[in-house]
Image (cartoon, rainbow, N blue to C red; front, side, top):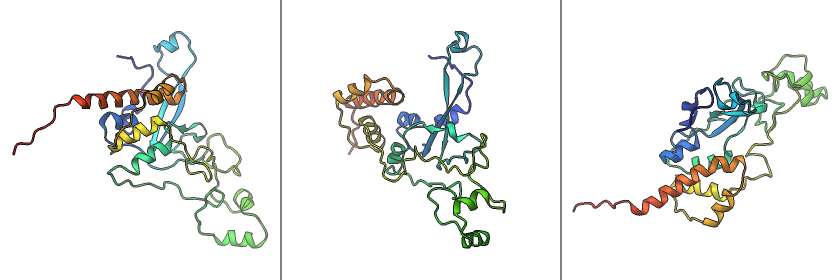
Length: 239
């Protein structure tokens, strides 16, 4: 049993919506579509890391059913949010599981955002456009007060900075490359046949990085469950 090294902050709530819980229960009904995380210093005064003055941080989860944009992150500074698990991996599971998912759109696109889906143009915008003022100038320097990108950011970045979508799984021209570990998790949760490759698993197990650190416990659990399934007593249906 490992002792809790930090003060739990809604950890039970987020854990039940995580990929870990889905694998443990082999059920994706509670899994959140967009798992994010952010790091903070360890708050627990009696943590061994604090006592021995080991400088490190801990990760807090923030899981939503909608994509978070830069400057629109429910009070969190989205500058420091990152994908806790690759979103394409999560979507590959949720898009093919037996549950109907409602993909929420929490924030309406604005004219100064990337990927504008056709926000209705106001009379002010039309007037400024006719005067040769660019869309960016209207958004940032218009005399009429309107919502600007970054209005609610705590670090008060310049409003002409567009939302950071560099880590988006929807960026044009970029596609996420699924790893062998991803494929094992996807197959397990979707009930597909598992093709076990000892060589591929070992090649990942010998690596030391955050991705392997998060994935390998699930892979070990899946392999154990897969192995034990060979020895489960078959149910006999009485005629």
